[in-house]
Length: 111
Length: 121
Image (cartoon, rainbow over all chains, first blue to last red; front, side, top):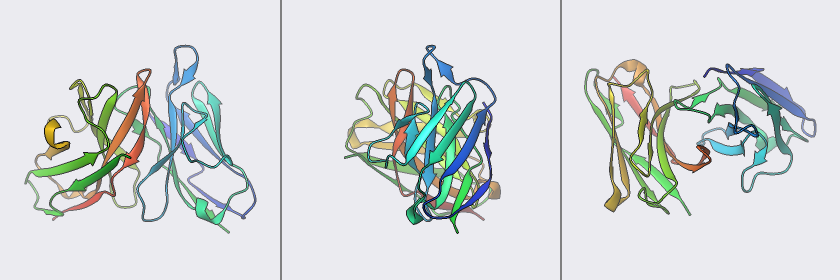
């Protein structure tokens, strides 16, 4: 399954919203209810960390300014009120079937 | 609390075999629902899944690298080993092991090691 993200980079003013799109080459819908799509962020010099799983469920400890949405093969990660600590590269990953595949990443910078 | 830590050589000669160790704590690979993966990242590039093992010894390899990869484990020592043969400079990158929380035939990587940078030269 090929994952395609856009844009590849994003420059955001603190306090503004940001949106990242992710498309999969096939539907990630399973059991007619769940979408097997995860979002990760890799902050500078760090390992990736999970933000969202099942397309819209926030992982433990993730601030509620992060939200995931979408269905079928089109998904979006929204960051409400971007903060300086949100800089990094954001990846979507399909968890429908192995080999798990990641998008190319979207680099978020702060203006 | 789950922790993951990668170790192994940081410099490998072309054509040689790389063996990496993932030492983990906070869970056992014999516990139902547990899974661990190896993921790598070439410098400045995206994440790439390499191999994955479930608690019941179901092992999945990346099709593009299958044939070069072998995943083994020592459950009693909470260690997972990745062997990659015939190393090439394009295999240079940071190698991560990550714990996968699984449910409903899916899941997510919730704990990652710091990674180990392997240079092939």
